[in-house]
Structures are given as C-alpha cells and as structure tokens.
Amino acid sequence: MTPRQLKTLALVTLLMAAAAAVAVYGRGPGKGAGDTASGLLAPAFAGRLNAVSGLHIVTPDGQFSIARDADGKTWRLAEKDGYRVPFGKVKKLLVGLARASRLEPKTRKPENYPKIGVGDPLKGADGDKKGGTLVEVRAGDEVLLSLLVGHRRAARGTAAATSYVRLSGEKQAWLVDHIPAVGSRAVDWLDSQIMRIGRRRIRGAKVVPPKGPALDVSRASADQYDFTVANLPKGREMASPSAANAFAGAISNLSFEDVAKSSDDGDGPAWAAEYLTFDGLRLRLKIRKQGDEFWLTGAADYDPMRMIRPDGKAKAAVMPEAPEDGAAEARALNRRLAGWAFRLPLYKGQEMTRALADVLKKPPAKAADKKAP
Image 1 (cartoon, rainbow, N blue to C red):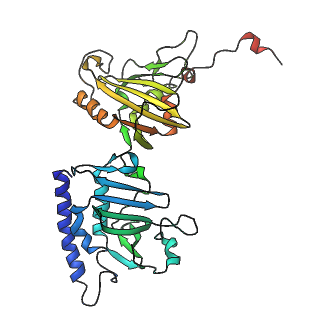
Image 2 (image 1 turned 60 degrees about the vertical axis):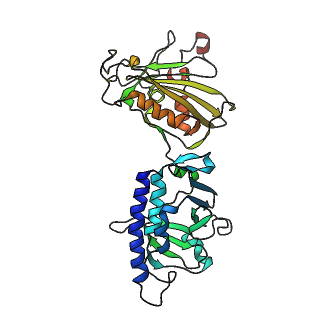
Image 3 (image 1 turned 135 degrees about the vertical axis):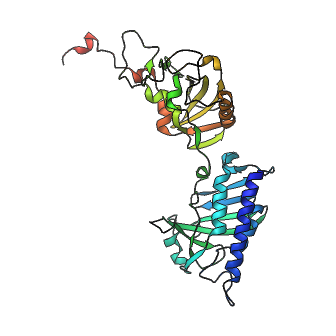
C-alpha cells in the first residue's frame, strides 16, 4: 500500500485495538468472545488490519479473490485478469469488519440460516441460492477472519444499516452494525467508469462500420446543441435535428459491465470510431461485436493545434470544462485503456455503432412503389 494508505489503516488499527480492549475487558467475568450479546464481532481482527494481503469471497453464483500486489500499492482482482480494485472499496469492508459490533443474537439452527442468508453459499437451501456470502480475510496463507454475511437491513431514519452474520465454524448468527454491502459479483469491486468527457467539449465523432458508409457528425461550436451529419448524402435529410446526438455524446459518460485483457485476434465485426473535443483531445476507439456483446478498446492523444474555442474560432483559450493539462488527461486515459477490453452496456454499444442510415429520414418511395394495391 502507499504510505497514505498505510497511515490510514494504521490509525484505524489503533482505534480499533482500543475499542477491542474495551469490548473484551469490559464484559466482566465468565463471558467469552463468542457468547456475548454485545461488543465487537471479532476483537482480535482490529489489530491485524495492516497485515491483510487479500480477500476471498464465495457467493452462490461463484467465487473470486482480491489480492494486494507484492509492492504493496495496488489491489487486483484475479478473476478479471488482475484488473485494479480501488483501495477505497477494500478499506471500507475491512474497517467495517473491524468495527462491527454484536447487536443481538439470532438463530443457532441451520435450518433457519437461509431465512437470514447465512447458510453455506455453495449449498444454499435445496439449490435455491439462499446461502450467504462467505468472506475470508487473509494475511498470506493465514485466515485472519472468516464469516458469512447475510441479508442486510437498510438504514431507516436515525437507525443505521445492519447485517446478519455468522462466524465460520460457529452455529450462532448475529445482527451486527457497520458492515457495508459486500459485492457478490467480481465486477462489483471494480471502478466501472471508463471515461467521462463533458458533452460541451465534444466537437465531433466518426465511426467506420465493417461494411457501408461511415457516420461522420460534428458541430461548429459548443453552443450548438445538436450535431449534424457531415457526410450527408445528396437529397437526404436527418431524421430529426437530434438524431445524431446519442452517438456523438456516447463518451460523456462511458462505463463497462465487464473487463478482460485485450486481444487483437478477437472474432466478430469491428467498428472504428474517433471522437474529437474542442480543446484538442482525440479518442480512437474500436468496438467489436461478439455475439450480442460489444467490447471496446482504444487510446487517447492530445494536440493543442486541434484546439477550437466554444465560439468556433481556432487556437484560443481552453474551454472552462476542459482540464488545465490536456496532455495529462490523455496520459491518464491511456493508463486506464491500455491493454484492456471493456464490455459496454448493450444500449451504449448500439449507440456507438450507429449506421449512417439510422440517423437519416427514409428516402421517398419510388413511383413504382406507390402503385395502389
């Protein structure tokens, strides 16, 4: 982890260790760590936060692992080719587990586990997938904490959110606080944002399909809301003034539903797209269709000579919406894009692969087609 990350967890560890001492020694004689109806769920865990090197999560739908790199700075998801996991998501769960306090004992009967979601995730109840989410926190090969996280009660008014849990190997289930919702899918742990380019910045876009003419749209200035077709065929009209807007604005909020290492030997037709901004950023993207899925790869570059002012005049001051350093923005985009393919939401893939005919009015019917039946 970075020095800042280590400092953050070290401070949390100190606070949690103090809380654990209060929880353990404040119980009075005759009460063990597993039979009290109050106090921290896992007192010993708070002092081991900085030793955590990975998580293993098992759900009724599958399992996945998140591990810290050897350099200690980055967390990665093994089942997604090592794609980076934001440290904030890992920290939120670890701190929540360290702070979790027993509020109320619940069932000890295995037949009742499915009702609160703390059963074995691999067995469920007669195959109905009512098992819990198994969370194992590891330091190397050592399991620091293992528990089943079940159903969650949402916060209401002044009442905080609570969760049903059961420590692995114990029969007693508990209602506890502080534990955040645990992502049950591997992709839930990722930052799914690919890019967010302000719509006012977008100058134009072009996509070349596997077959047929390209769709090339642009606008003269940022004050012109609608994009127009630059390669409008003779005698044809746009279907509406806004017909090309969804295609042109697709990069204003672009996210993914899945991610994998990119490969040049993918099957399926591919579209080549290029997006330009008024302030000099260019995005060169490839959208490949595999079955019913659209996968995106790409790269960014910046050239101040492409800069166009909002009023349409060239080589002027950067737009207010643009970053102060366009070259730095392009480098940041390339760090995210390089080496990866992103599965787009279906509607977004369809927007980015629009055909020229999709934004035009249908041609008038020929005389031969107008014959009465």
